[in-house]
Amino acid sequence: MQPASIDDTLAQLAAQSYFASRELATALYLALRMERPLFVEGEPGVGKTELAKAAAGMLGTSMLRLQCYEGLDTASALYEWDYPRQIMALRLAEAAGERPGNDTLYRSEFLLKRPLLQALMPDENHPGARRVLLIDEIDRADEPFEAFLLELLSDFQVSIPEYGTVRAEQPPLVVMTSNRTREVHDALKRRCLYQWIGYPERDRELEIVAARAPQTSAELQRRAVDFVHRLRGMDLFKAPGIAETIDWCRALEALSVTELDPQSVQNTLGVLLKYQDDLARVDAAQIAQCLATPG
Image (cartoon, rainbow, N blue to C red; front, side):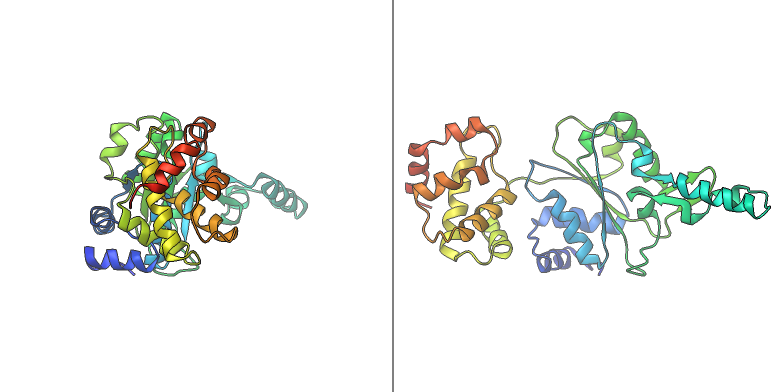
C-alpha cells in the first residue's frame, strides 16, 4: 500500500522487517510521490538491495531485479526475440500457404521480456499495484548502458522497431544501487533522488538482527552486535555489513553457541570477514580485546 506519510513509510517498512532511518524513509516516500528513481549508495551489506525488496512488500507487488555487470547490453536488460519460435511460426505459415509478415513473426508471445521491459508493463499477478524495479550495482555496468538507462528513465517508455512503443501506465518505483566501485555519471544521478546508506547505529542494528535472526538469544544478539561494531572500528579492508552480522548470528545459532567466547569467534570469523588479510589482522589477541571491551 502506498504510504501516506514519512511516519507511515517507516511503519510499513518495519512491518517488512526493514528498519530504515528517517532520512532513508523520507527519500523513499519522495521517490514514490514524485515518481523519481531512487539512487542509493553505500558499502556492501548495508541493506540497499533489501530496501527494494521491502518496498515491493510494502506496495504489495513483486520486485524485478536487473543485476548489472560489465558488458551488460540492452538485449539482456530490455528484450530479445525468441528466434526458434519465430522460425517455427514462419515454417507453419509457409506450409499453410500463407505469406508471412510482421504480424506472423513479431507477436507478443515471441517477445522475451527482460526486467526493464517488464517494469513498463502491468503486473498481472498484482493488478493495480505499482511495480518495483531494482537496478542492482549500476556501477558495474558500462557507461553506454548508463546513457541508455538515462533515456529510458526519462519517459518510462521504449520503442521496439518491429513491435511498437511500450509506455508504462504507471511509472515503476526504480531503486538503483551502487557500491562505488566507480563513479556513476552525473547525468544519471541528477535524474534520481539520492541517499547514502551507512552502517546503522548499534540500537538499530540490534533491532534488525532481532527481526532477521530471532532464534538467537537476545544476549547473544547484543554481544554479537557489539563485537561487530568494534570490528568496524579496526583498520580492515572490508568491514562486515549488516548482512554479515545477521549471517553470523544464524551461524552461531546453527552451532548451538550460547556464549560468545574467543574460540567460537575464531571458528566463525569467516562468516564476518571475507579477506585473508582481514582474518590475519583479527588475531586471538584482538578477538579477546574486543570481547573484553564493555558494550
